[in-house]
Length: 187
Image (cartoon, rainbow, N blue to C red):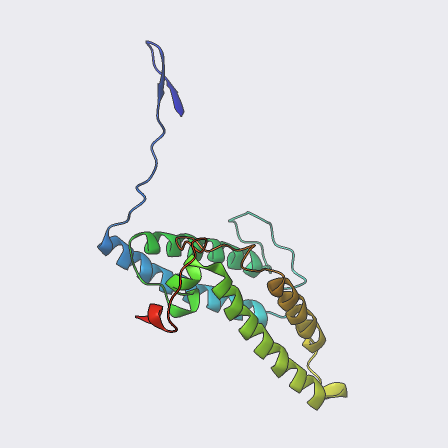
């Protein structure tokens, strides 16, 4: 409830909420903005990776005024991720299709499918990093290789800890017992 004061009395009125549905043309424009935001995020990520002083520079947490010598790449990435999530949410509310790398409708309805997709990607990445680790020694070994392997293993452990019970599907009733023929639900 929003509360406002007036000369005559204290008025209490329901708070206004934005419409849950976004019209189709607005959703399309939001999707275009999302594409641009994802590009901006990747550009910022590349700039952070290329900036030799990025990890040692201390930039103000929320200042918009530039600080000489310190570009806040990490903060901008965090801001970009937040904005991309908001744009994706609004675009989906209007029925716009998201870029394929942001998941499928099934993945949004049944989070365990997204977890399975992430497990597959991290497993592949861990395999590639393991191959690289076995082939390189000494000075030829990439500096961050061991850390990347440790992070992949940790993420895989965390992902595998989530099960269907912990990430229940939304919109699909699995409680009722149904008997289907193999492939019957594929359409």
